[in-house]
Length: 144
View 1: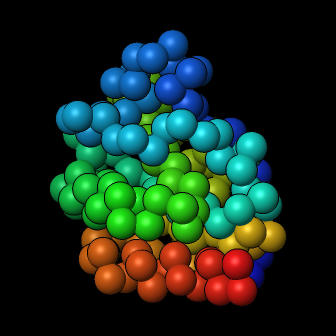
View 2: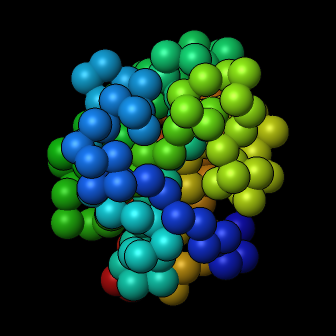
């Protein structure tokens, strides 16, 4: 908390040439692949969700991404919402994506609320509610 967020690139719909399923295991894919985290961090608040809905060991990744979609729909102008899958090529055998390693995440899912200065304002590990994500986003947008 309070540390600068690791400036990592996240794949976008444009990077996937429109094949969002190649970067997102949610069915249907989430709407949180329009911006590259590295391009928006430090410019505006960001909610960054690390989760792999179809491959999640804890089976709470799908609901967590759904909750992030719900909060995004209610507060679209408060932050950029970015969803990052965990595994390379959406395959467990391929290992973790470099973004997961850069954030040193030992488990999933995670959600981070980053303020407009690029500092981690809140973090949520495992299952969380819309109220909890809204509270995390509030911490990132204070004074915004």
